[in-house]
Length: 101
Image (cartoon, rainbow, N blue to C red):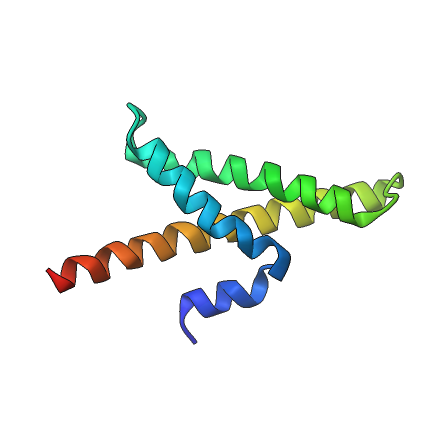
């Protein structure tokens, strides 16, 4: 199974909308003075923040200690996976585009 397929199976379907958003944000950040090596870290922070908002909004009441830990774990892992899929997908797109030229 390809890496992209594995990542898609691990990511909550509702959070897949973040992939094109992160690719778009990455292309904007790339045009700034920020070095390319920092872009994945910035995108990870954005992705984890957005995943946290989603998980908190959909989890209901998580006032318990276990509930808070579950929200944090889910948001962090989903944010990292979404970023991995967007960066990996974008790099594959660039490589395919290069081969066509």
